[in-house]
Length: 116
Image 1 (tube, helix red, strand yellow):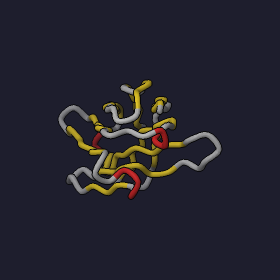
Image 2: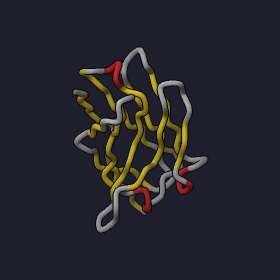
Image 3: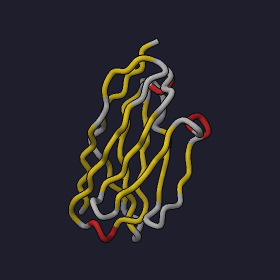
Image 4: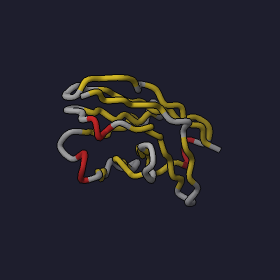
């Protein structure tokens, strides 16, 4: 099993920045990819950014150039640096981990609110 604990959400004005962190514990060696998803009210959960253990990344088109995902394997932590935030980024952000065997794990979610 893997446990994920997010931190770093909050309220920020448009144009501002936030950094989310997600610390993993448990069966760490089983994890390959980690990433962030978000879900806004009335919308489906969507992928924001993802990074593999080897460091390969992919991003949603809507956040390219503004968000950066990074990973510290020694600390079992993944980060999401969010710059130039816009109100459309308002959502609950969920940390996600996928194991080599195909199991998936989710954090409890952290609210990000961007005011205009």
